[in-house]
Length: 62
Image 1 (tube, rainbow, N blue to C red):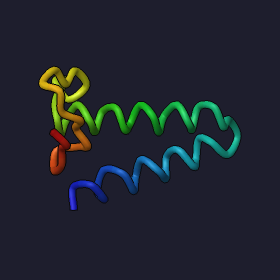
Image 2: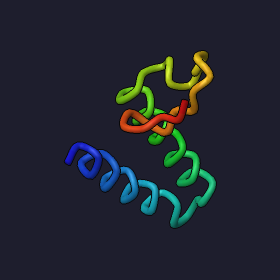
Image 3: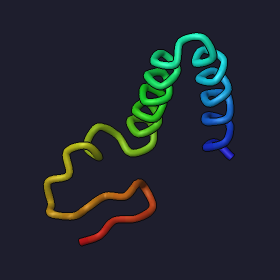
Image 4: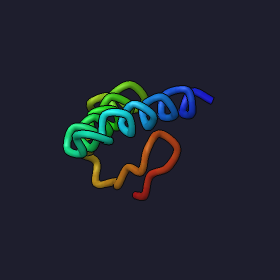
């Protein structure tokens, strides 16, 4: 449910902003996804150093 509580308002805000300025809406979405990644998986998720591919907090491939 946290996923929907975060992304539904984010997508609504991106749509609202993107109606007149598409670039800002897209940038807001990418910034929101980055914030979600940092909040859920932490900064180390971007710097995977053990040879595994990390697909999020629930799955990885070693």
